[in-house]
Length: 235
Image (cartoon, rainbow, N blue to C red; front, side):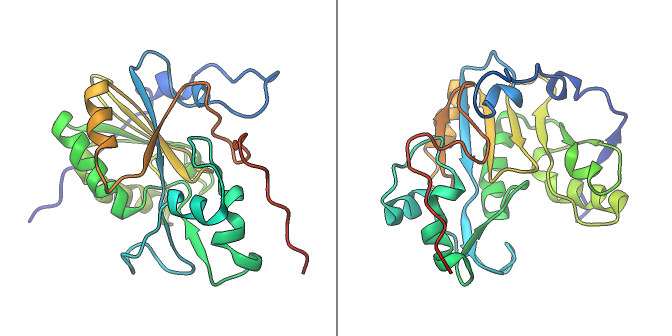
């Protein structure tokens, strides 16, 4: 079977996303509005699942949810839950064995069902943009166009440019901008902007762990404003 076509594009079409207004520095933390634009009916947080420590995503199908570990930690499960709240149960005594979570990339077991939904809504080629993930590897940002279910081929093409396997893509969106998937290089969740129909489908998929958010929701690594921050254990 032939590989799906992947087209590298000149930079430019991504400007509507990477040139968003900077967040208000007078407020605490970083809001979702720093990475996704206004005007969409629904916004969702897509949690990256936990997998056993020191395993590659393709080596095991064992995954665990943030909801599961929130219950173990006696923490409130909510849309601004952060990794540090769960650290006492995912990293007991702050050392392996434990659980880890992808940052800056979609877990393959999440990417497949997500892209299946997106492909039904947008069968035409979509844009895929690598920003900071490319820059930290010494490359300029990279922009590609391919079917949404061809992300693996796009990752391979981008990695050939950088010379090292790359995280990302940071943004994925169709020509009509009906939806956006944003996966920040430094964060352990992705965020989506979409219409109500797609949001309802995604929220009903048991293979995906999502919660509704708003543009005011915090996305930084200290975003949890409901649970007390756990103290480091003394060792």
